[in-house]
Image 1 (cartoon, helix red, strand yellow):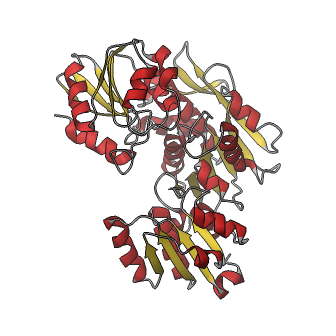
Image 2: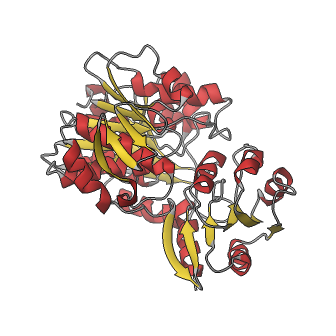
Length: 445
């Protein structure tokens, strides 16, 4: 599980977010020498540094010791660290193996079968749905990865697991050369992360690492409505299960009858699924196929799906004030996610949009704004948003988030939806999308 050279030297952990902290702690449990560093110098990082120092981790904040990392036996990199950062370029040039925390966690949990979910949108909800179906049917399963719990933390606290259900970002897939899922799920593909990738092809290339160890024993759950998904999986060995909202497949949506179907049999009625939007019908179909491949029968899937509620920050209804429903979709950090949210709106709505852009045009939203009463744009991308959406619906620019929310609330009428679906990252005013969504929640009267 652990190469001898790691024990003879020192492993470097780059980035001290949740995954970096967990990786450093697990390595020390294995009595491996660890150097951990983070380029940030913040109060939160200082607290983490003190905790790791108590485990005899050599910690540095505010910088990376490039020479020391270049001599490491291996580098474990957090997903938030760009691959072209100086310290990783130096490690790569020195021939040091670079692995994601996800790859390290799979080593730590060797022997446990796992399902990997990736895609541009819908990863977290689909991952949570699969775990809900597995645990509800009596399997001992946990969710981990990009969904919030590092795999190495699972390895430190859990035992006798039957399944791991892992959400994987493109960044994690890039540095997970040993990953070989029993079941892989690809939700969809769209333009994203162009602030980090040089091209869409480069981004899709990292997603294709899901299939890098594909064999005839592999099982793939694929979105047959997404041409890019099917093209990416073209020629990949393994058994394929497809879902569709448009045609009959292994799992599909009977739009006329408003039923989720498995083959020729009904899974459940649409109104029993407590999630907004057709995209969540797709997520439920994907989860039903993945759970089925893991041994859960369709009738049990149908019994369990109605008890699954929307996850925080993902088209999450958070309450009603003066007959206006507030919906928190802070996780919509790209234009495609916001397009999906707009398609899910069944009432007139006021759209709160903005933050830090990802190099995408907001013009793709122009044809999706039927039913939009007004737009309130805020943050760094506010002027770009209004430029791309000029003249479609009434719009206001309000720089600060709190003032933007209050402005949007005043524009909403009884029976409307007040929708936070920013189409942008949160980093201009918040630490992450969760902090943004939580702030939205606190501003509801």
